[in-house]
Image 1 (tube, rainbow, N blue to C red):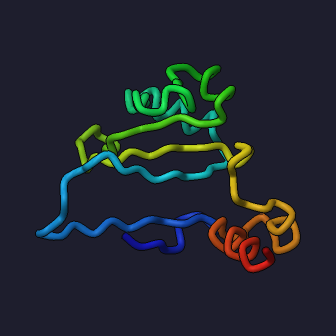
Image 2 (image 1 turned 120 degrees about the vertical axis):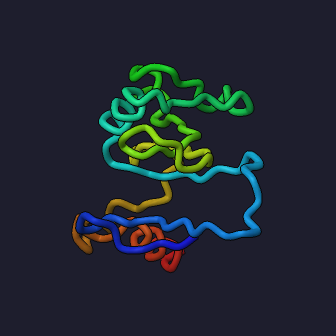
Length: 129
């Protein structure tokens, strides 16, 4: 797993590298913070990717756009190509950048510019604490 500059200025790309001795999906997940929760939910929903983890019903029991807006989050568990081909299984908790748990200090992004990568904003914030 590695983080790289993404295709859009200020974005990041996560690279997954398949290995021969990789372990199967065991329930772990990653959390991503995004600016476009509604658009991302619509695209995931159109492709039938929205997932509700029964372990976290108290956090984000999300099936609809209204529920996603209220929770400021939703989940997917399968990564699929644009043609729908399964790529891998890994739970992604997708949160709005406005979610109360977001670690990004937006005042830093305003100071350094909107194109500042999110990881840099998080790192700068941690360095200041």
